[in-house]
Image (cartoon, rainbow, N blue to C red; front, top):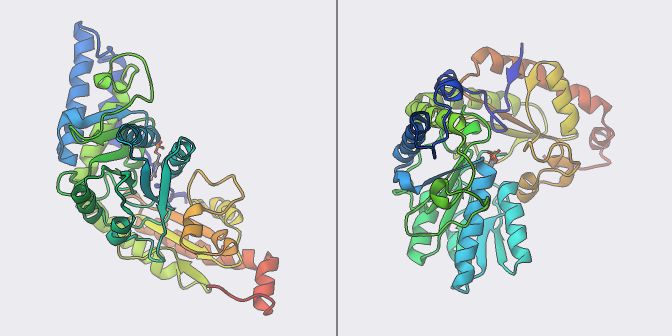
Length: 396
Ligand SMILES: *Cc1c(COP(=O)(O)O)cnc(C)c1O
C-alpha cells in the first residue's frame, strides 16, 4: 500500500483541474496579448480565472495578480509594502518566528536595506494572539505579515482579529494563506485582509501558479519581474494560461467542497493523533483545536526524523519531517524551535499532511506500521539508551 501523506508539501492535480487545463495546451494556446481569435480565446479564459479567484476570496477581479507561485506572491507583497513604507519614512515590519522562508528570507533582505523587523514569539499552542500584534505596532510600522495557517504544525492564526487591529492602526496587513486557501473559508473583506498570497499546488492545482491579492488603493505593487505589460504592468511575462485556468478550476472545486472535505479529513487527522500520541514519549506539536483539517505534526523522543521518513517510505508511507525546504539540511525546523522544543526533540519530528483523497484504510496502515518503526529506531539509538538508563532526562 502506498499512502501519500505529504499534502502540505504539494498535492496531486485533481481530475477537474487537469480537464480544465488540457484544452489550453492545444486549442486555446494563444497569447492573451494577441488581438487575433486564438489570443482572445486565451484572454477570455484568463479573465474567467481571475473572476473565479475574486468570487471565492470576496474581492474584485482587478485586485488579483497571477504569479509563478506562493513564493513570488510573498516576495512581491513584502517588497511592495516596504517600498511604500520607505517613501513614508516608515521602516518597521512585524511578522512571526514561524513564517515560511519565502517571508523570512525576504525580511532578511529588507533588514539589509535598513528595515527593522520584529518577529513575534510563538506560544506553545502554535497560535499567536492579536494582542501580541497590537503591542508590537509602532508609529513607523509599515507592514504586518502573518501567515494564515502554519505549514509545519497547521495551527490557524486569529486573522480577522489581527486584520481589525491593523485596519484601526492604518497599517497594511499581508497574510501568507498558502496553506489555508482552498481548505479554510477566506473572505478578505470580512477579515480585513489587505494583501494575501496563495498557491495552486497546495489545493490540487498545478505547480508554478500563485495569486497575490492586494486591496485596491492600498499598496502599489512593485515589479519583481520586469518586462511586458501583463498583469496591469505589475508582473511581466506571457501568462501561464493552462496553469492559471487549472488553478482557478482547482480553487473553485476546493471552495465548493470545503465543508465536506474538512469534515472527512479532520476525522482522519483526529484518529491519527489519538492513536499515534499513545506511543510513549511522543507529543503533538501545536494545539489540536485551531488546526488545519489535514495536519498532524508529532515529535518522538530519541528518534532522528530522517531515518523515520526512510523507514516509513519503505512501508509505503510518504511523509515529511517538517517543511520540504528544511529536509536535506541538518538543522531542525525553525518552526519547532520557535515553539520552544529543544534541538534533540525537534530532530525527531514527523509531519503527516492529509487530503480528501486519503482513505480510512490508509490511516489504519500508518497506525499499524509507525509504532514498530519507532521502537526499532529507539533500540538502535544511543540517545534513547541514555534516556532509558537515566543518564539523560526525558523532555516529553
Ligand atoms: C508552499 C508554501 C509557500 C510557497 O509556495 P510555492 O508555490 O511553492 O512557491 C509559501 N508559504 C507557505 C505557507 C507554503 O506552505
